[in-house]
Length: 497
Image 1 (cartoon, rainbow, N blue to C red):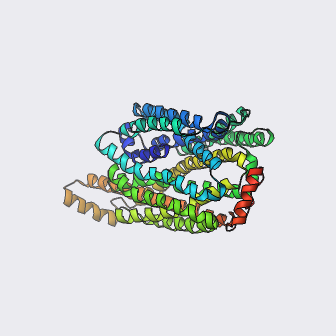
Image 2 (cartoon, rainbow, N blue to C red; image 1 turned 60 degrees about the horizontal axis):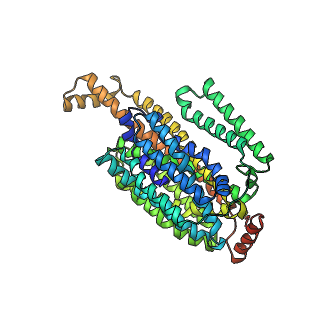
Image 3 (spheres, rainbow, N blue to C red; image 1 turned 45 degrees about the vertical axis):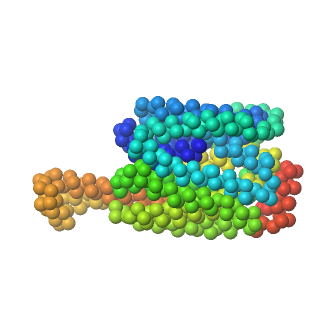
């Protein structure tokens, strides 16, 4: 349900911009605040699940998420909506790592690929339903409904989890308060700098101070976690090469791809003139394709391991993302939909094996903390991706508009001819015709900026392709059994590549 809420809000971004009268630089905080707050609480999820029980924490977090959804629906400004999204994130941010942690504690390791594939169906079907449902609610009812729809589902989920889920064994562990504070401060500072950098100036004292503070807090966090006996986020897990490579690939690909979730609705609704409902229908087949491929990739993972699936899947993602550099104001929705489907097929083939390979490589007793680590990387990378790609898009939009503006003057033969045609066709005076031409240039500049941003996204994914060679060799029965023995003994993964 937390994933469903994210996809609904993505489609509603242009509507929220109009309702609250803000631009992309401010409305992005509706997305970034949720992801950042999730990144702050995710590291604690493994500890709380181990100490208080995964079922108990799952029910509590689902309740917090449901309450936050109600607050979002009652928001009267973009600032209050951002605050309510933070409340949502406190509960919703821990739901995914808690569910994943439970899965790795109860499923036999030799069947983990298939289990994760089935688990991934629910994770991928939410983006399938979200854009269409969100578009329908925004078009026909109200933007408030994209949050109110969570209330009955959340209450039902709390009841079912409390009745049917069994509690996990409880462990005794001391809470790492300094580690929690250091990581929270560091992540918040760096993402705030990325989001405010363009408005404040990247060399301004404000941004430089944030960057220095982020570096300081994250450095202290790493040193503290390496020195404490009971770390909140066990940095020593990065000593496992398969787990480390899995996290690195996840981070790079997430940064490259998550911005697409932010850019596509803006392109389709602002430039192509589609409604939120039409945007949802456009995106739905791609999310459905990714969800259907999850169990297939899970079964293939159990047979051949992560490396071949990651190589093929990431290659498809990189190539199709590169194709988005061709988008312009004349791009057909059919072409856009097909490219989204092809890209999602690559994601469905690659992402589950990459994450599962890393999780299987750690000792069984640390699976909850590893799940928190994995999901922290995903959430923080997604926040970074939105901030970074928004900066790229805005910068390139300025570049394209300045280039076009040089031609929009009475001294330009091309502009002079276009202005003359507008004057005749629309019966406009010269200055008004020039203004119309300027608005057209703004639209063209935004289209060019979005196309350039997808080039950056494709480059990020391409970087991850050679890294997938380090994920490990083809799985065999002996390797799976060895991994199980080592996990149960608390040792290292047998499949280091």
